[in-house]
Image (cartoon, rainbow over all chains, first blue to last red; front, side, top):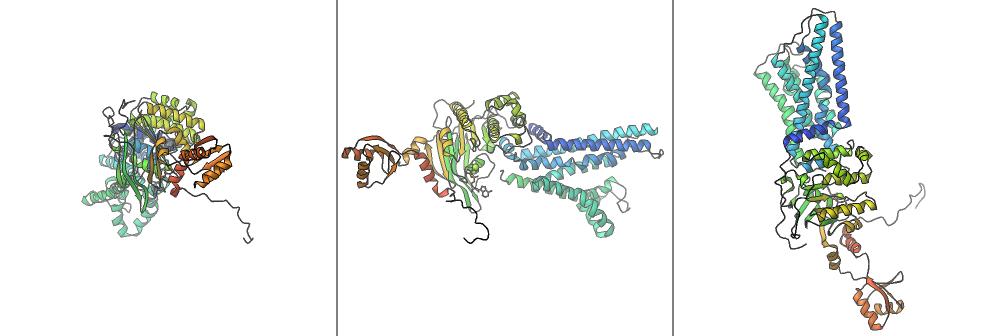
Length: 279
Length: 323
Ligand SMILES: Nc1ncnc2c1ncn2[C@@H]1O[C@H](COP(=O)(O)OP(=O)(O)OP(=O)(O)O)[C@@H](O)[C@H]1O
Ligand SMILES: [Mg+2]
């Protein structure tokens, strides 16, 4: 074109890199500002309220006054269910909707470090997991107080630390697995389908039958499925009635299932997105 | 605006050097080099599939280059901290969440870049989107409104550089004029603009410089005048009192002559036509270089890459009849 001299240099001294926490805040906003996000939250809220109402009513009206129900059971056995059913979808859409709606071009033009953006999204997904745990705990506490007052006994607040810890890990892992699968699969409907097949449908339909039918399956599945791997930490018995023990084997299985559903999807998904063409 | 320039107008803000992108055996961008200077609007012109969008995606790091490099203000795009504050990008105005309102889309951008909320209203006003329109969801936007929102988004961070892919696409004539004014004043304040289009008229209206691309290769570049000067425009339109005599004289000298309106179209430069007329004492009433030089140039340069239109569209043959 013309005789060109040294290229002009941008003065970038007054524009520091986008702070990570700002990215986290923006990603949280993007997760909740759409209609899809709104409905997901609303339906989950309704589910939580219905569960709270149901368990409180049953507790109040039951004539089994002698068997007291405590916070631990209300939290682990009841209130964690409605907050685990639908909310992991957020961890999927926070990744996949950027591709579905093609906002990824804008996102990565404003922050070219894809790793930074994806980490911010992962932090948001994990924050969401913790938020569901807090909501479940609050609801369990309310139900505990209501039922104890109605049945006229003093509420029990004792919680087994190990069970609590594993329940937190299970919930966070569910979100991270959903996140990792979304990075690997990219398509929203496909990622949601795969996630529910792996975490809900297979365990409910296939695993439970196979578990009772075959000895080898009882040996194999705790290495592969996270809820079976977590069983020794959560319960005193395996589903078939055998007693559980927390030993080296139990930890090894937990590590194996964690690797399979945490490390592999995250690793594969990350390397895929970091190298992909964004269009 | 930062990066205002006084005299140094010959320095390049955007430098694209030997850029190549292959998809398998297909070369979408083939050894492309060009520069964009501050204070100028550079038009990136080429037919469909020429490689404009691919080049621009490479420039902002969305597509990896097979080889070659791009520097913007001396930086790789990915190394610019908070790049939205330096390089405004519009690659596809529809590539936004259909369920978000225009205002929400700008809010997300402003929040990412760390800009005050007031900037959103400024930008909405700049692109003439009313407060009511800004509260509509993107899926209810017209093409032109999406384009305006995209421009607003690109300008949010008050960048020194704009990279816009088909920004005039979907704008009405008034909108194109508005965009020309907007980009001209942006360039006059020292900004660097690269915009692409497959329509010569658009680019001709808006751009100071042009880069012509066809089949992934740069076929010509420069400002409009030098482009025309470089292409030997050896066609003239001429009208004489005696067209017949002039036509005969020109044919004798080996030029081809065809009637055109009142006068003749000749495959010769105006100076040759004038000389012939003077020698024969023929009175001319009009003599000029043939119009549409740039358009011809564009079609010529990119001829091998044009998509041929079907010569005629035939009605389907009724079934059962033998053609
Ligand atoms: N991922 C891909 N795989 C294969 N070919 C591709 C890919 N991406 C782009 N191309 C090809 O590269 C060429 C250039 O495409 P590009 O989108 O850059 O054209 P363009 O100049 O922007 O055209 P238009 O004016 O239609 O927007 C096209 O032939 C396109 O099919
Ligand atoms: Mg294009």
